Length: 189
Ligand SMILES: [Zn+2]
Picture 1 (cartoon, rainbow, N blue to C red):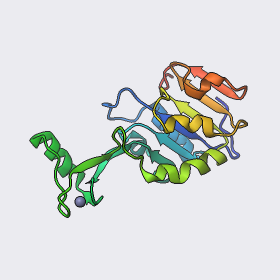
Picture 2: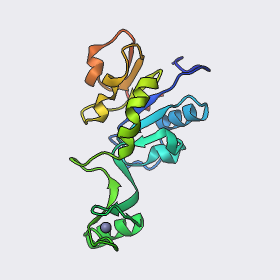
Picture 3: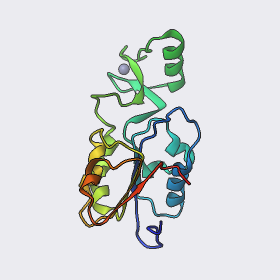
Picture 4: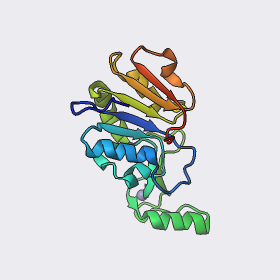
């Protein structure tokens, strides 16, 4: 793939893994990190909650974990932070959610459940990113979960889009002449 140059190519990426139990970054995560180290990465938008983009070394400024992660926990009422290890221990060993030390509200890990608002960071930067990215790459996703699924529609018609996926999904069915579809597993060598 020769889409990476020394000039201004940037990348917005999505990645959904169906193997969220994996604890080690994959080849795809390492690709993101490589782009970041070369100064080519604008942002990674991930729907994964396994935190592997961060583990692989993508800088937090270049990462939007759209559906949250397990590294932190907070009160669902007053949003006060809560120790995530204590939260996990309570849920796994006692089978119940801990309560907030400040207001008594229920505490949960900072993962976005169905029907909940995405982290505010998503709306704060996504529109600027889709306007300024030179290349959009999409990896391993059904593109069914909004609003992340709309990102490929939001980039301009002149922005090349690359889909690395088992099947054609979402807005890629339009097959713009600037699209590139690479069918297969995103971690295939
Ligand atoms: Zn609270």
